[in-house]
Amino acid sequence: HTPRTITVLGETYPTDDYTNLPPTIAALLERRLHVTPPHPLNTIRKLIASHFEGFKSYDNLPAVVTPELNFDSLGFPPDHPGRARGQSYYINRGVMLRTHTSAHEVDIYRETPRSGGWLCTADVYRRDEIDRSHYPAFHQTEGARLVNVADMDKLKAENEELRRGLSASRIIMEDCPDFDAITNPLQASHLPETVLPVAQNLRLRITTLFMSIFPPSTTPLHVRWTPDLFPWTSPSYQLEVRYRDGWLELLGCGIVLDDTIARSSHDPASERSWAFGMGLERIAMPLFGVPDIRLFWSRDERFWKQFRDGELRTFQEFSKYPPSERDVAFWLPVGVAKPHAASHAAGGEGVGWEENDLWDIIREVGGDLVEDVKLIDDFWHEAKGRRSLAVRITFRSMERSLERPEVNEVTDAIKAKLTERLAVEIR
Ligand code: PHE
Image 1 (cartoon, helix red, strand yellow):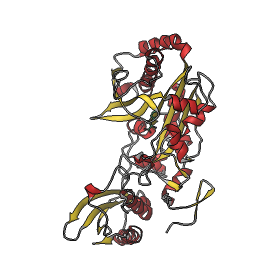
Image 2 (cartoon, helix red, strand yellow):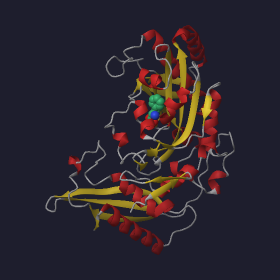
Image 3 (cartoon, protein in one colour):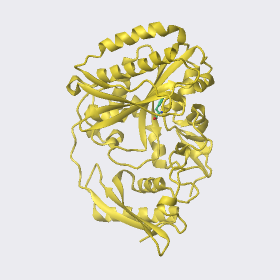
Image 4 (tube, protein in one colour):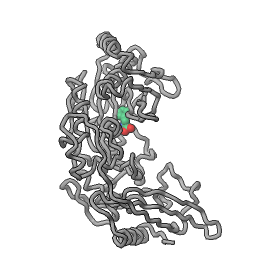
C-alpha cells in the first residue's frame, strides 16, 4: 500500500520498508504557522526573540532531516526508543521529519562565532495520540549560547544583574541543585567554576523570559526547576510553570556535551554552551487561552480573525456543532503478543503491531472530522490466544452538523482500512 515515491515540500523521495509518513501529516509541513501573522505561534516566536538580543534567528529550516542529524549528532544511542518507526515519521531509512529543533544544533553551532548565541523556531513531528493537548505536529524554539571560559567573571556579573531583576513579587522560583554527581553530573572534563555560572545564566535567562512574556495578571509566576536527562547535555534540567491547577512542562535544557561542541568545530576546552528547547503550544495555550491544541491548525476564520500580530489576546471559543461517537472493536492479528509481553520500549518492532499506526490510519481516513480517539477496551482472550481492542471515535465538524449516514460511511471506511493495513478482524 506504500507508493513508490512520496513528495514532501516539493521534493520527491523513494519509499522503503521504513516509510510511515501519512499524507495528512506531510500536508502540515506547508503550513508554516510560526512565521505567519497574526498566528499566536508567530507572536510567541517574536516575543521570545525580543528577549534574546543579539542572538541570530533561524526560522525557516526545512523539517526533513537525516536520522544522523536528529539523533546521532546528539549522541542518541542506537537503541533509543525515539528512533523507532512507532515514535517518529520516516520518509525512508535515510530521511525523516525532525522530532525536535535540536536536530539543527550541530549545523547552527558550526556557523556561530565564539561567544555567539542563536535561536531556532520550527515545526517538529512525533507520532502520538490526538486529543486536546497532544498533536503529532507542534512547534519548538531552541536557543543556545556559547561562553568563553575566560569570560566567567563577566558572566557572573551578568547573572548578578539578572538576579536583581527577579522581583519576589512577580516570581516564585523553586531552584534545583546545580548538579548531582550521580544522576545529573558535571562532565568529567568540566570544572565547577567554568560550568556553574553558565548553568545559572541558562536558568536566569529563561526565568526572566517567562517573567517578561507572562502578563502581570498571571504573576507571581511560580516556576520549578528539576533535573532531567538528555543524551547531549549534562547537567540537564526541566522547567515547569504552575498554571491553573497543574504544572506545565515547558522546556528541557542543559550544558551541551563536549562531544557535540567538538562535532560543530568549536573548541570544548575553551568554550561552554547552554542550550534549551521549549514547546511553543505549551506556552501559547495558557497565554492566549486556547483550550485545544488542534485549534492552532485551524483554517477557520473564526480562529484567525481573533488575533493581531504581536499582541496577546484571549481567545473566545466559537460555537461547536454537535459530536457523534462510534465504537470500533477488533481482534489484533493472530501472533501479536500479550500486551505485557510486547516490548513497548523498543516500539514493539517485530511484533507486527504498532499502536501509533492505529491512530494514524483513523486520522488518515477520518481527517479533520475526527475530534478524538480513545482506547476504551483492551483484553486478552485466553482461549483464542488473541488480543482485542476497542476504540471510541468522536466525530465533529468545525463547519457543519454531521449527518448520521456520513458518519457511518467514514466509520466503515476506517474499518476497511484497518482491516487492510493492520490485518485486524473487526468484531
Ligand atoms: N530537544 C529536547 C526536547 O525536545 C529539549 C532540549 C533542547 C534539551 C536543548 C536540552 C537541550 O525535549
